[in-house]
Image (cartoon, rainbow, N blue to C red; front, side, top):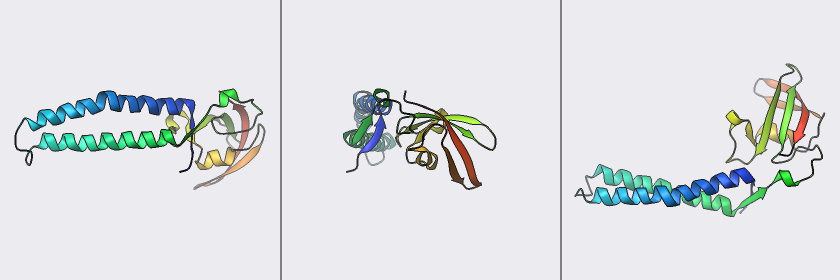
Length: 158
């Protein structure tokens, strides 16, 4: 299977979620199933069926996280020399050349992406347009509203 690029923070967050699911959520669900079984007939027991469904979701998420972590390629940009080139994990400040508006993004793995926190996926169109570019390089982003010109103002490896 393909390697999944992931930052150190992203891998840590997945490990934390996995630990929570295994040590907290799973025992809660098992207790809920045992409690629901005591209420009698399982065919008409909504609590039992809800708990079993919750168990299925939990176990599926555990398997998903374990799979991602086993295929993760954890990249720590803080240990790389900053040569000003945009790479996975870099924090990039770009400027819209038309509006002169600046925005800072961090390029992360698919699971870590959260536009509200300015974390963009390495597979997003804007990240793909920036990868390999350097400070003061310009690039064009094709959007549904037309082409937008940007310039890379700063690249940090933090």
